[in-house]
Length: 367
Ligand SMILES: [Fe+2]
Image (cartoon, rainbow, N blue to C red; front, side, top):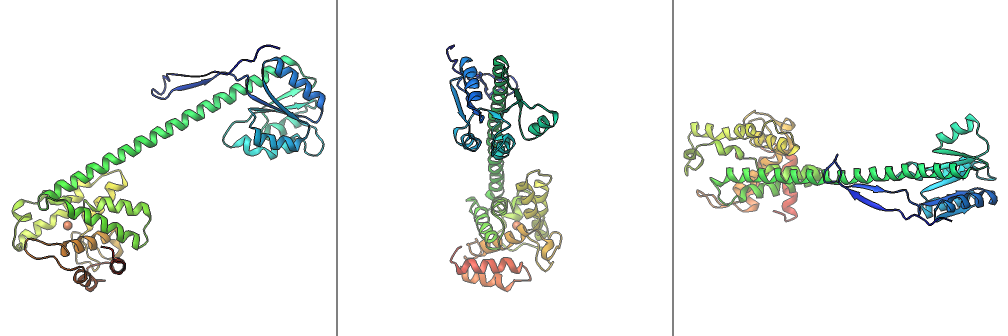
């Protein structure tokens, strides 16, 4: 008997996809070969042939049911399967091991048959057989066909592993890009707010409360996260408002108020055309967070559910945060007084559903 050849796995640079190593697996002489045949003489003949060719791991059974169990538990790399067997025949075995043939790995099955009619071959191929060996066996043919199938299996495994690596890389890069985008947007929000609140805390608090409200009204975790992040940009358009108006300590004149109100459209214009859901949500919030449920808001005078839900939520969170924190011209309102004021505006300024969510949060003691 010739000495068994150990399989070697080596990696090489991949010219097609730099950075993803090309994994080559030589035909494995220690590949697991399973023979299922009810005739012990056939098994002995095939074992002899395979061992002479250097295959060291050859298992066998004359019982087709035990063969199915071995496929599932011993994890062969190739199966040599007899067609005509009492009880469960070759087709029955193929049906039973279908998950191993179609899912996950590529398990090649060679059918051993003396009956090579076209109908038998068609049915066997349809059942997942990859090749045929006709009895009586020719040693060279047996080894060549097994090696061919093992090589195909090896290439299949290699390609699958590379695909997994590439998918992992793509997922990592996508996450990095998303994180970079979120960071840039947060810095943009901070830049806008820096002019009238150098702590930047207002936008963060509005994002936080908006997320709590979104959860309370039953939005999905993904929507909630989008709103949490996008809400911080609600006043990004203030970057385009002159200091003389933005920082004016007293009441604004009508003309100044008109200019101030432009921050909604300026913010929407800054965020317009974004391709990500995050930027699109931020645009909707920036544009519509001063709309009112009764249609008396600005800039579009939209009402009810025509106002995007994210903007209806941020409207409540923004109003709550502004009143419940100190301003240069007035002290902070208590939470109870602020909520009471918002409840009064239920169905007028604010979406009743969002107001109810705020009341529920207050009852739960969350601010
Ligand atoms: Fe605003």
